[in-house]
Length: 566
Image (cartoon, rainbow, N blue to C red; front, side, top):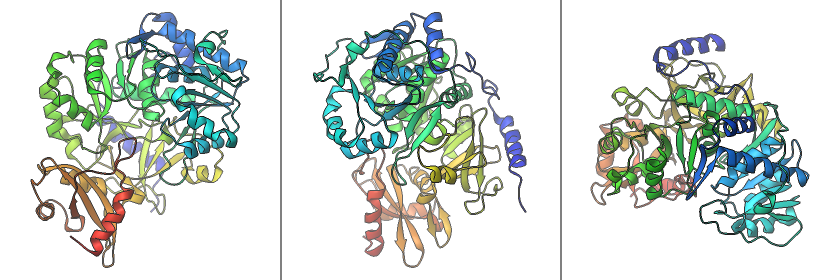
């Protein structure tokens, strides 16, 4: 029997209303109304001129300072011929110039294209060619890789800054003397451009996916997507809008999660971003205590590093009420949460961040206020909480697209004001993923009795053992409950009798504390027989440059284990 999707959603909304925290809104609230992001900047520059907008190393940039720089860089963009709809690539790591450039691009109605500064020539060439960007803003150490791709792309002008040019002790960039290259200091002397773009629904950014299912795709996002995501997620986490919100961001701001947390959320609520060029525990503690940081997104390892520092108690962390974790490698557990609260204070509740993806501008759910009894950490992984106001999430059959009953696993689909308009120049991919107003994510998930989402992994990662579904995230979570286990990565291996079997690569807290056979025996007492993995203990994992385990490199080893177990 067919289930009407709107009736299904209405039922979920009713369930979610019963558990939604009392201090969070049921509808999205825009602190300044539905204004563009440059309009937000101009407003705060007038109302909170001296408030620090960006703190970077030894330099604080006020809202008035940032707004002035944005207008002048926007003037330079106009002077070199950038107009509405033109794509401008921003090829740099974390620094204030990234934020200033992004706002300048949006101010004149052009399109922001953030590019990974770790790219080599072939990767850079692909995104510049695919986006059609003809102007690039970069830092001088990256000029050689940019010059390497020049013959293959339509590049006509480059704006060059230094990574620390706006730090307290600036290092002048090395800028080639060429007519197609301009120094940042020269651009900042341009005549300021007026606000030219006020259409929230015009194309404003191409945010490229990670390319895990083929070549990266440019997600077309608008300023409405940006504004909605950050207003909705701020409200869902009860973030203040009185200027006291202070984020510490070391996440790369070319990532959409870093863009939200390090640029857009502080701008929407009129707060401050303490921006780090990279993760460094000492700098993080200094930033938290100096600026009264209220929130940070970091890996579980980052928080463990802070806990291990002997000078932790010397820093004032009394404002740090909303530390957010992402479980890339180590998993957030009740023990880690308790250790954090004991060291920092009961007001600092360590919790998972959110579910989201580049296509939805991320931050689609929030587990805020749902941690009583560690329910969020002890329930089936990964607990993502309820949708932020204005977003609907459903779980449907991969085969039929029909909504599935509460508790059944299927494909997560998302409907929200932040879902991408489409993939840049890829109509077939757009038609495949966007159907009847819903984004089909390709992710496995389950919705519980409270209407909360549980993320179970990508469909391609699911392991089928004699037709039974095994979700790697679940096996990983269960194994990390063993006291000797530090990190787990579960991958599939082909098996002639079962189709597939799970294989767990495990690192230990103390080398030699347990062997693979003992862990398998423990697993048999902990999980259903078809989920019990083969176990290989390892000293280290292959890692990506962004700090995730490269599971694809573990699959070959897993298949060798099945053929010749050790």
